[in-house]
Image (tube, rainbow, N blue to C red; front, side, top):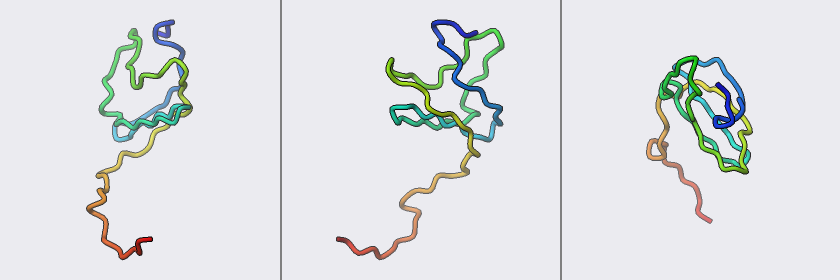
Length: 85
């Protein structure tokens, strides 16, 4: 249910559990969360809060991407000889 408390609907996406959701704000803040980490809510609820915004901020974009199997750590990258300036 959209109410004054919940605010207006920004967007809606059809997603799969194996995807991640990216939310970008006008202020430049970006969050990424796995779809499987978002709790399900029934039809008569007011939704699930994914990000808290300041009064002056707005959502700029939402998108879904395929979940990455494993993040690459800097320590996993091969060493290279890069000259120091």
